[in-house]
Amino acid sequence: MFRALLRTQLAAFGAQLFQSVANRTKKASPLKMIGLALLVLYACFAFIMMFGLYFSQLAKPLFEMGIAWLYFALFAMAASALMFTGSVFIVKSQLYEAKDNDLLLAMPIPPRLILASRMTLLLLVNFIFELLIAIPALVMWLRAAPAAAG
Image (cartoon, rainbow, N blue to C red):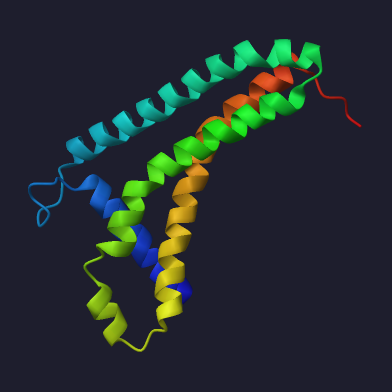
């Protein structure tokens, strides 16, 4: 049951992202969907490059000074800030303004499963936001401070 709810939540979230705001009943054209997918990929690439340049400036000096904890603290603060600001609006629309609450609560589905599926979706979105920062931070740290096999 949980997997079915999660699949439904993911499908609804994808439809919310890829359908036009003015016309929710009609599907977006394939050209619009390709354009939106390219825009999302470009935004992800821009975030990865931005944080990559940010962490490349910090990694070597902090490694040489022996304060690697500060590097990872800055990574954690940047990731937390992006996850918080990125998920505030998603939480509002997914938890508080969901239009299918009445329908789901009328079915013989435990409310904890409904809430768990929505919270899992939020967790997945936060993991994606964190990866946008974690990947460049790790790559730049490994470039500045080569890790030994041990």
